[in-house]
Image (tube, rainbow, N blue to C red; front, top):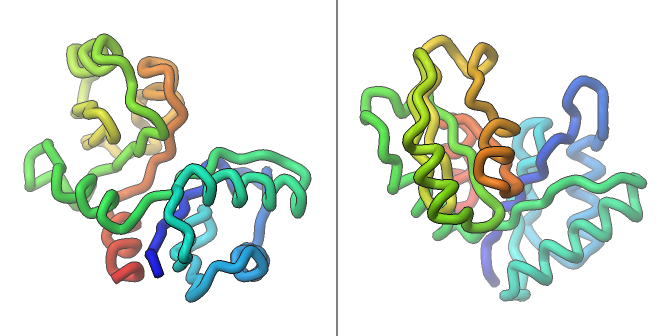
Length: 176
C-alpha cells in the first residue's frame, strides 16, 4: 500500500466550509482508504491506498466532499516522498525554518511567474518560489504578511495551500 497525504484548502476557516475531522476520517474510510489519520482542524489527512494515480485519488476525494458536504474545496494529494522533497529543498536561511511557511503549488507555474515572484521584495518578508512550493519566512508573522496563499495564487496563476513548518514536520512524522 502507498501512503498519501491529503491537504484540503479553506475548510474550517472563519466558520465557513465546516468539516469535522472525525467525519472526514469516516468519509476517507468509506472510500476504501486505510489507516486514516487526521491532524488538526485545517484538513490534513494521512491515509494508505493501493491506488497509484494521484489524479484519480484527488478526483475521488473532491467528488466525495461535494457529495457529503455540498461544497467544493481544493484538494492536494501528495506522496510522503513528495512532501519529504519539499521539506528537504527548503531554500531560505536554516535559522528561519522553524518560523517558515510552505505554500504548496497544485501545478507547476510558468517560468515567468516564478521569476516574477522571486524578483519581488516586500518589507520583512522573505520568500522563494520553486516549481512546487513557495518557501516563506514572514519576520513579523504570517498573520501580518502580505505574501499569503492568495497573493502567491494570483502572482503564479496556480491553486495553492499553505502549511507552517510545525504542520509539515508533523505530517512527515505521522506518515512514516
